Length: 255
Ligand SMILES: Nc1ncnc2c1ncn2[C@@H]1O[C@H](COP(=O)(O)OP(=O)(O)OP(=O)(O)O)[C@@H](O)[C@H]1O
Ligand SMILES: [Mg+2]
Image (tube, rainbow, N blue to C red; front, side, top):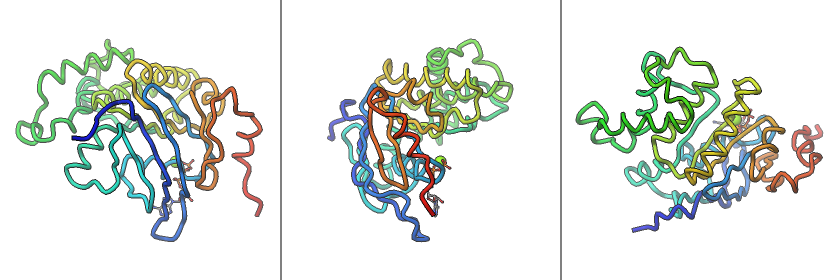
């Protein structure tokens, strides 16, 4: 039995991705996110951020390198073992992708589906305990009062909170967020980042978040990782990271 200690968080080492068309998207990426930590990834369009997130969630198999979650190496896992391991990783993105005609509570409870794969196919519904638990996750994101509202009626900020509650229902160790505030106004963006930071602390989650908003990154991240042309350019706490280094990250390569 592998150690399932939450101490491990997320560790990426020597990660390489070369797409079939020959594009080298990532080269030698090393990073860690400890439980309780919010780490933000910055970098220009096309530098490899989404590729990195997809490798971590194993929706894309890396060309080389290793991803470890909670002390368990995901490399080489397949089938049921990979499915189980991926339950430790929840993902949110720019779009909340809720089922609009269903209630907020049902959307949140759906996050637990992966933990009940057999139940679901057999009964076609979740255990009632999970539906009740959905209220708890909604309370964590401050939306308990909207449980019975149709998801299609929510504002963008509310919908993103529900997506976060749905991710919590999965009971992950690691939360991956790829531009979670890209569609939100500045106030809602600030609230979502505060929420992610709080959840990292209270739920001991390792949170890795891609942002294009440098000020939000400085304001909320425990560490900022800069990616440039598929490589780590810096990995520092905000109070040790000069603004110039961030500005350089976005300079286009000389033609
Ligand atoms: N399936 C693919 N096949 C070939 N090249 C790809 C593929 N997916 C992405 N790329 C290339 O890999 C590089 C990194 O893409 P990626 O989507 O990871 O960037 P990103 O940092 O997330 O950018 P953005 O900020 O625009 O979201 C880009 O040059 C992109 O064109
Ligand atoms: Mg991207």
